[in-house]
Image 1 (cartoon, rainbow, N blue to C red):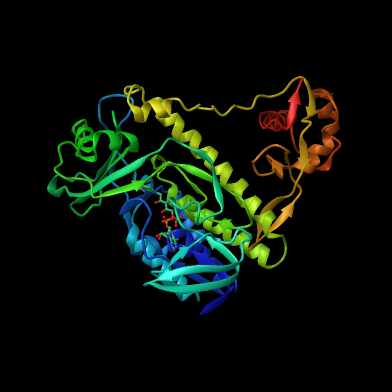
Image 2: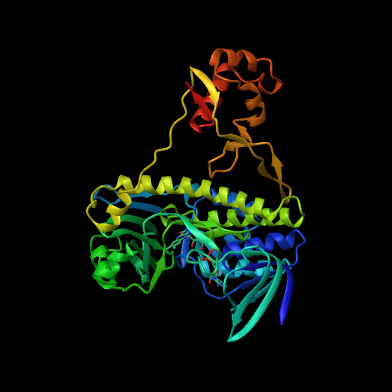
Length: 462
Ligand SMILES: Cc1cc2nc3c(=O)[nH]c(=O)nc-3n(C[C@H](O)[C@H](O)[C@H](O)COP(=O)(O)OP(=O)(O)OC[C@H]3O[C@@H](n4cnc5c(N)ncnc54)[C@H](O)[C@@H]3O)c2cc1C
């Protein structure tokens, strides 16, 4: 039997459910199929306070009441010095602790209520069509199921890759595995989450607020293979200065936690952790996955409305993910560099080898400015209602970043008109005074904008 649908979403985690829900809300005929597995990371995952805006924009604010409780009352850190520092958390800065299984169920339920047909317990086989549409084979209870969809969206999580996805790994941080267990912490629970660096990696202690806590060790899988899971776990926990020290539990779960970004080889839309997974140190994976779901739904809707071809939208998605991945990579690498006590241990040695690629600070240019030779005009796709619309933008032809449609408040088109060949700053400022869109810019703010363009290498200062 072949089921025909307009949109097929593969993977029933948060990303898949949110993409499917949005597209159904926008009038699409959507089928969501998941294998019933729960990849995710840990049974409880935290999100930062600013995620509330994202949840509200996506209409998911009720999930906070149904599947989350406020974050811990205190945060502890034992990083780059051997003393555990505990700090009270202000009410507004507590964020939330999501019960992941509840959240996943809630999101799938919401998808159903929006009109998405949901099939659970079916696993996609083979390779998802690189053209972005066509037939997909699923296996469910030993039976085969074939879906023929106009558009396919893959949301199959962190460990998915070839052969299921037609992708190659673009960037990867060193391999990481999370060993974890749920433990009783009883009356000693102080409702303090603690992050501690140890020789084998780092420990994350997260009380649930109900007498139980999750303890996770993020470590190097090659060290686990060489020394054995038990030994690595015990040795790490014995170094803990916090509640994790000496707990009597063995890890019940080993989850792949490597940060990496894929490069899509064809016209398949890929969303959430399936396209790019960030280092769990940031505690922002879930929010990033939800925003990636939203961006993917917009890209899908734009294609289905025939405002853009699929290849353009896949390229746009790839660039969007690349920008966020770089930002998170930079933050994670800076944090790993800040811990210098265990440099000779494999986990830390691998991370210290990474280039901290410090983000340059823009300075105000004073010399002559020339547009970069590789500057190309390419639209930037901006949300307009429930679709993406092109705006004039520029980027470097060799860059894998998104194009830029404005710098500060000034459209790039206006800036391109302003910048001639090798003009000194003073002359640029005189010209700017005659351009309507720049009349409000003081010489200082214009210099700041041009400095930012130099930092982005769109302009060269001689
Ligand atoms: C150890 C660890 C801790 C983390 N802690 C946090 C945290 O505290 N806060 C935070 O914000 N983020 C955290 N994250 C990140 C967070 O878990 C992910 O960002 C989030 O789960 C991504 O959602 P997703 O839907 O893209 O993928 P997933 O949640 O992995 O969902 C993918 C779904 O697709 C299904 N699937 C896979 N292959 C197939 C197939 N062939 N056919 C059908 N279905 C398939 C899977 O079974 C799964 O249900 C953590 C991650 C890790 C690894």
